[in-house]
Length: 398
Ligand SMILES: Nc1nc2c(c(=O)[nH]1)N[C@H]1C(S)=C(S)[C@@H](COP(=O)(O)OP(=O)(O)OC[C@H]3O[C@@H](n4cnc5c(N)ncnc54)[C@H](O)[C@@H]3O)O[C@H]1N2
Ligand code: MOO
Ligand SMILES: [Mg+2]
Image (cartoon, rainbow, N blue to C red; front, side, top):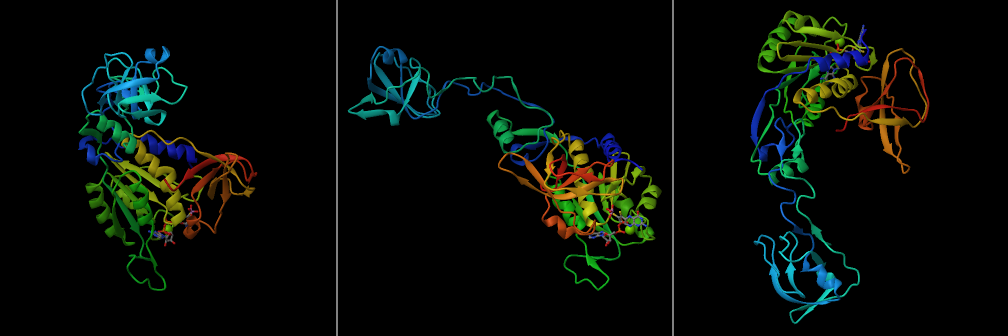
């Protein structure tokens, strides 16, 4: 059976090639940039006043001058003014161009103004203070947003400031989330004693929303012919199918056979891990299928450990930085498979991130995940894990 590492690598080797599209700045939130964005001007584009107050020549101050006659006001949004007379000043507003002939700003809080005269009331003035000099942040032509950037609030502000009314981004894939199983009824239905309401596809839809993907929801009963017919249609209409259930050893677990009949090439079925052992992964020409095990905790784990990283990579995003936490208490797990232990993370005053084990009662105990915010990946070759040891964690709340 495949290791977690091998299975993950196989998914990443078969990432989708998604085309680009152009969207308006207003619609670009959360999308992945595919053309880099450059500075069209210096940042800031002029010597910018950083405090409301007066602007003086530092040489006058150095020569002992403390009283300055106010000869005008430089507002933000006005062309640059000039101060030509010694021992005078201009009032200046935050965001204004620094007038020609001055080099130092003194805040209103540090001057007394009366009868058109500003008198400095503090002793400590530095040349160039309260200025944001041109090009100190970025230079015209600098790359501001590289390809692969996820466009969040800061990125959109930068794009707006350089005049990008439109941005080239990765086209979002069409994703269908498909629950399978005769025991499953819809959320609004009253289940009979042998039925349960379906929940996995709602979890998956929420998880995919974190990548900006709006997936559609479907349900298919445990009938091989119907499954084949519905999956053929869904495959033709979507880039990615994410199934839940029907991939294990049961007599109604038709998913692997039906996918083979439909020409989806299997890359793996089953991983040395718990939960989520029966995960199925395959591709057809520019189509991807994940068959997630139906037990809800398995579905969540497989979504965060394989499916979301796969979709991130397909969108052109860099992978998330690896995150670690320290076990808050000893943990034991006997079988020689990688164990994904549900944990609650806490941030300690000394800077440590602690992982508090929440083993729960197995891969069907999804109520247990309400208290968890990550899975800790405990290595396959060991069965005892000590308090204080650090291991990788996969967060489920992003
Ligand atoms: N003989 C064996 N039996 C099982 C094995 C095995 O290796 N040999 N593997 C077990 C493991 S591990 C898992 S995980 C499950 C996987 O089962 P399937 O993927 O075939 O899923 P189902 O049989 O359809 O359902 C399993 C379980 O999950 C519930 N379920 C399914 N879909 C949903 C949904 N959308 N929302 C909520 N709950 C769902 C379903 O009712 C079942 O209780 O197989 C073990 N068996
Ligand atoms: O892998 Mo299964 O996920 O233990 O129930
Ligand atoms: Mg089954």
